[in-house]
Length: 180
Image 1 (cartoon, rainbow, N blue to C red):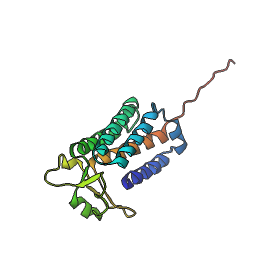
Image 2: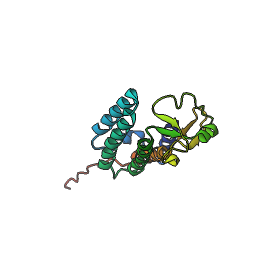
Image 3: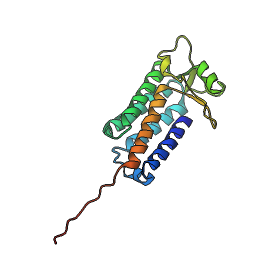
């Protein structure tokens, strides 16, 4: 989450430096916003109930988000977000939780205690499927270090691209031509 917030902050700064405005983000023509709300509620329910319902909730949530992203595929960043979420859903679906690399956690300075105690994460081991798609990217941010997946990196990049493009988006202005 820290990576996403840091990348979004950089995206806002880049958008502003390029002459964009945060107020233009409200003008993004997002379709089917309710799919995102349903996805968040589904993922929350799966996380709270835990066990085998966690990966089911994540996969259903990913399907709802994919439907949202498909409806909004022409927006900058949406394809990257979709690919990142698909990769995360594949690795969690294949393992029942997000596998975490012990080496990457050590490189980022993230203690394993607390990270793998819940239903969402597990330590990667030789039996882990698609381990290279798990949390293998160390992110030693000064405020809150973390370990993220390649899918998380794509999601962050896609969201930043959406923010920058949205900030630079021109508002549509109707021009009326008067008779002279």
